[in-house]
Structure formats: structure tokens, C-alpha cells
Image 1 (cartoon, rainbow over the protein chains, first blue to last red):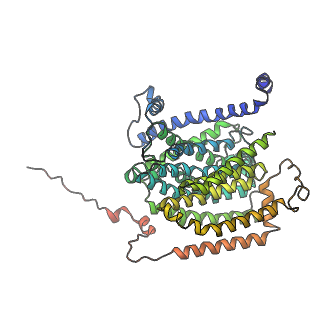
Image 2: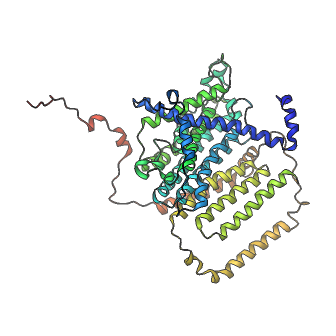
Image 3: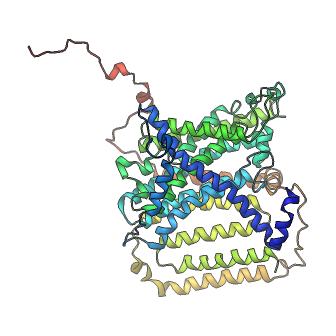
Length: 349
Length: 201
């Protein structure tokens, strides 16, 4: 690989590093965008089957070209900027919505050593970048200068700040037992232990000793991405579509892409932190990227499953779950894990 | 020019511009958003100093939580700019005095002999596997553990007092205990009755 790239590197000279990083970024983002497009297809098919319908089946075989048709349609639609809106912020909103959900992928390891930026504080980076996601919604809601978007933005601000806390505590438990903020190290630390030596790797992953945190992280992740049953931000029965009311065409599509890219991100993070990432569940099968893809797909299915199963939470119920259930539970569990780690019963030594 | 120097000036220029816009912007929401930009660039400069934990925490805490709540409040307020500008000239002397004092203090610290390159040499390059997070944690929980605990206590007191200030018991509100809601069974609410279908002759 190195030898093959040598002449290309000489051609670009000192700009080679930048070019090479750009190529890597495209290699991550392009498949992600295709994945996002087909996640919308999968969502409509899965929910269709769960509700006894067929789902999209008109465009292409089994409706497989439906996402392309949708994308093309959104591209060709006019972008309408309301005359009473704050124009620069109105355009900035969707950009700020999608940028963090793509930037977070910089530190996601796809395989042992296969990561764009293998930084020490990878987990912190993810937390910090995903904390920016709320700005897209808030700015869009405010810049639209209209009631429903504004209400949606206010709901988003309250909800995302609330669930970030319990998500953070769940992550503290993970980094307590893996003693590292580097995502690759967190995955590798899950491949050690008594069960991993017996060839039953899936029992040594974090989901088992941290089962309550696994559940809390997944549910908080659904709330952070504003997905059903926590989608009061865009609840169509109450605030029409929240912050997206005034957006059309590609600006709307960017919010849409951001939401689904965030679902991918939360699923991938859950797989990495609790389900062993690229590690194989059993000893006799090799590790590899396909395991991460499989686990991420399974987590994405949970997202769709939850949407088809649960009715939307009332707003006060969401706040109660976040502040009165998740935060006390996670806070206590941090102490439990810390005590467990220091006791002679510790399984992480 | 070294690439790092270029990044520093890039971040610094945006940061100073955004900081200026915070105080000159006529719209409070825009001012708050420029403050977010300032924080973000400050985090970038800290990253250049290998202080990745501080940089990420700045983004996580100030940008991700504090400024979101700040924006939440600012967006709700109906701020009349003319009313705010009314007392500008009468407040100017006091404001200018405080500004000059701050400037003097900064000049004394930064320009003095205590902060020069001879007093504080460039730190040696970080060794391989150096983790700013680990070092901070080690110092925070050993050398400065009392200060750390004190700070957390102060924050706890502030939090409890904020809750007590805003907590109010309203009378006459209808409240449903979630435990009761969860405990409801189908039999409590719905009764299925078997009956003959009614046919019209």
C-alpha cells in the first residue's frame, strides 16, 4: 500500500497529508451517506412490515431505488427563505445540524488500527462534538421567526441537555472499567477476561457487567437523536414538525440526513462501548469490521423497532424519566462500579 | 511560517473578532452565538497546547450545556434595546474604570518579569503516550484534593440554593403518580362484553 502510494505522494508534495486525510474522510462519509439513504428505506420497510403493510415497492426492484428518488426530488425543490427570518442564521441552522454528526466519525475505529484520528481523548471528543448538535435545532428554530419552530427549539434545548447528563454518567462507568478514553483501547479491553479465554467473547463485553448502563445509554441515545418515542421536538401532532417547519428542499434534507447520521453514530457508539465493536462474539470466528457493521445494524433495528412499538412520550414524562429516573440510577451505578473495581471481586484487573 | 503558528493565528483572529462581536452585536441572540464561537476557538487554541482534556471540557460544558441554557433564556426574553441603551453615558465612567483596571492587571501579569520566557521556559515536548487527562486526574485527586472537594461543595450549595429558590408548591394542580399509571391493568379500564349481534328482523 505504502509503495503503491509513493508516486502519488510525490506528485502532491507537501500538500499530500491534507489530500490523503481528505481521501480518508470521503471514504468514511460517502458510505455513511449511502447508509443513511438506505436507512430511510429500511425504516419504511421495517415499520411497514410491523404494521402489516408492504412499504415502498414502486421505484426499482423491491423499491430499492426509492431513497435515490427521494434525494433527487429534495435536491430539485426550491429552498425557501422566509422573508421575516434571520437569513444568515436560517442557512447556518441545517449546516450546524449535520456538521457535528459527520465530524464525530473522525474518532470512530472501524477495526484494530482502522481509524481516521486515533486520539487519546476520543470518548471526550465524541461527547463534546455531539453536544454541539443541539445548536442546529436551536438556531433553526429561532431564525425561522415562527411559533412552532421556536417551540420545537425550546423543547430540543431542554431535552438534549437533560439526556446528555445520564449519557455522560453511563460513559463514565465505561471508562472507569477500561481506564482509557481512547475508543480503540475501550474495545480491546473488552476482549480480555475469563469468558474471552474460554472462547465466549460476547460474555466478556461491557454489556453484561454494565447492563443497566447499556440500557440507559441506548435509551438516552434515542432521546438525544430526537427519535420516537422521544420525538416531541418534531411531534407532528403538537408542533407540526418543530424546527423544520419553515425548511424546504435541501435545507430540510440536511436536517433529515443529520437525524439519520446521528442514529448511525449512536448505534456505532453503543456497539463499540458495550458490544465489543469489531470483536468476534465467539473464539473460533475471526474479528473484523463485519462484526461492527452487524452490531450497528442490530442497534439501528432497535431504533426502528422502538418507533413502531411505543407511542410518543408526553413532555413531562420525558423530563421525569431523564431527571428523576436516569440521573439517580446512573449516579448510584457510577459508585457501584467504582466500588466493584476496587473490591477483591473485581473482574477487571 | 510553521503550520501550527498559522492555525494559532487563524483561531486567534476569529476568536478576537467573535469576542468583539459579543459586545457590539445589537441582537442578544447573535451576541450569545458569537460567544459560542469564541469558546469554540479558545478550545482550539487549548488543543494546540496539548491540553485536550480542558479543550474538550470547555466545549462540552460551556458550549454544550451552559450556552444552550443561556440561549434558551435570551431567546425567551423580549429585550428592548433602546431602554438598555438609555443609561449608557451615566454608566460609562464606572465601566471604563473597571475596564482600565482589568487592562492594567493583565499588562502587569503578562508583561511583568514573572511571566516572561526566562521565568517560564517552554515545557519539554510531551513524551509518547502522555495523556493530559491522566495527568490532570492524578494531580486533581492527590495534590489538590481538598481544593477540589471544596469547589464541589460550593457548587453543591449553589445547586441546592437554586433549587430552593425556584421550588414552589402550587395548589390545585392535578397530578398523576407515574407508579399508579404503570400499575394499571387492562381489566381496570376496559370490560369486554359478550353479546348477541342485533339483527333487524
